[in-house]
Structure formats: C-alpha cells, structure tokens
Image (cartoon, rainbow, N blue to C red; front, side):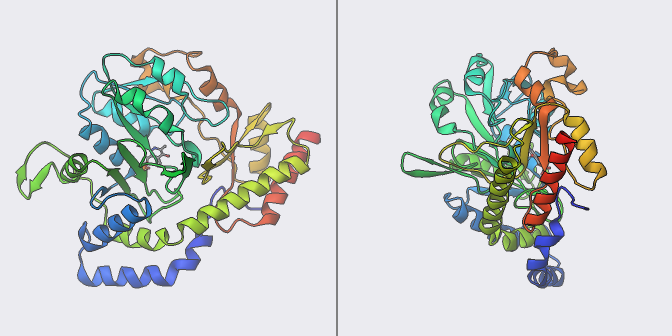
Length: 378
Ligand SMILES: *Cc1c(COP(=O)(O)O)cnc(C)c1O
C-alpha cells in the first residue's frame, strides 16, 4: 500500500481544464497582484460566508491574516492574547511577532479546542484579544462566551485556517466559522480544505471600520496610493491564487461532504474491528458540522510505535501536533513549564492523523484500519 496523508492530485483532476483556461487569461493580461480576480474571489467568499459586501480581504497567507487581524486590534508590546497551546505555531507566533504576550489556556480533551472556562480565568487588565482556533475543522461554540469577552472590551479573532466551511447550528440560525466574532482568519495553504497553488489567506470583519483598516494594512497602511495613514505590511493575494480558489470554492461543499463520509466510515470501521479499547475516534459535537480538515484519533498507548509500523507499511499517518506551544524553545521567555497544560501535553502523546481527502477510497480506509488492528492484536 502507498497511501499518503494527503493526495491533492486526485481532486485536482476534476478542475484541471478550467484552471488552465483561467491561468492563460491571467498571463495574457499580466495583472498578477490583486485586481479583478481577487475582488471576484472576495465577493464570492462574502456570499458563501453570508457576510456584508467588502468585508473579506484577501492576503498573502493564513499567518498574515492573523498578523493583520492582530494589527487591526492594536496589539502592541505587553498586550496579552489568550489562546490555545494545541494548534499550529502561527496562532501564537504572530502575537509574539508584534510584541504581544501569548497567554495559553488548556484545551478540551474531546474536541481538542480551547477550554472556555480556562480561557476566561486567564483574563487580566492587559488582555486585548481572545484568539481561539477551530481546530481540525470543528467549530468552537463561540456564541456561548462572546459577551464575556466583549463586556470587558476584549476582541475575539477566530483562527479559521482549518475550518473554511464549518458551521454550527444555534438558536435556529447557522453560524459560519470565522464570522461569529469580530475578525475571522483563513488560510489557503495548499493542504487546507480550500487550498490554492501556493500561499494565500483572507481576513474578514463585519465591522466596516475594521475591514477598511485591514484593506489598508495589507498595502503598507495606505488608503490612497503613496499616502500612508499607518505602518502596514505587504500582504496581498495573487490573481493566480484567487483564480484557482474561485474554481475550488464551487466544489468546496461537495468536497467537505465527502470528507464527512470518509470520517463516518472510519468511525464505523473502528467500531466493527473492536478498536475502541485501543483508540478513540474524533467526536463531532451536537449541532456542529465538522469538515474534518484532519481526522485525528487518540491512541491510548504505543502511539509512536503504531505510527512507525503504519509508515513502514506505506500508510501516511502523522502527528499534529508533537509539541505543545508553551514548551516550544522560542517561548521559553514566557516562563511556562511541563505540566502547565496537562490536556494539551497528553494530546501531543496520543493524537494521530489518518489520511482524509476527497478521492480517498473505501478499500484504502479498510486496508489502513486492518493494519491498525494487526498492530494491536499481533
Ligand atoms: C495553516 C494554519 C495557519 C497558517 O496558515 P498559513 O497559510 O500556512 O500561513 C494558522 N493557523 C492554523 C491553525 C493553521 O492550521
């Protein structure tokens, strides 16, 4: 078996002719930066996410989306940002880059998302932003705690890099990941559910003052060309990325739905093979529409041995994430130590991501699960 963790070529086949047609047009015009393709994509995202006009701002990466959102929230030296230690590095790396202080709160062992009670406990008079992550494609129940933070003047930025298209049902309404709080940050890194052919990102804000500021910040803080209201960065979405993302956006619902079917089948296979005593399948909370950016199981013992065994047998399984962010060498100065966030630390020893992507076939899943069974019962 040779099953990679992700095989993007399978879904690309479906859109290849359309992509090359669009690329040819862009090369003919030679308009590569921002322009009509980006505007068009931003408009389509606003419609898809049910956001007001001009609220979506394309930028160069998910990391820059976070950076721009934090800049638009005036994060400066010493300001505290409450966030999760169990996520990709960029979530807190961007805070630190602006001189802000990442303040970690432990996560929930079932959803792997930040624990709200712990986050609320970390509020001080220096807290400026709460930065939760909709990890692996499942939304946090943000609606429950928005007012707690807003009442204290704290902004909420949603790291939605892994959850474009995830939703929650609440009070008869549909809540879309990245649009529930103040600012939403998306990544179009090729491996994400909506991924381009290079780096790309987007930041969205319903508040017009914020979205206008974000739009200026991505072009060096200039409202009118060569006149600078504040110091921004150079972070724009390329026309080429926008063209491809526009095409992929039309397929996103179908692809996300396919990921959900794959997840259901893994769950069924785990049960049918009596593997529950060795591992736990991911849990989708009630009212959530999980889009399974990653399918992350928890392995009770011998996670590393299992990973090695599967890798040797041609199955691309991986660990997201092997080191909790509070223990990263670069954050030593924050003064955290081992034991500070026991849930996050335990997850780093237990989690294992199985392949999940549009085009993954049932027999490949069966083969993988039967190898897991072989490992535990050999
Ligand atoms: C991918 C990712 C980012 C960063 O996005 P890039 O486009 O790679 O810069 C930020 N946060 C999370 C949770 C991510 O998964």
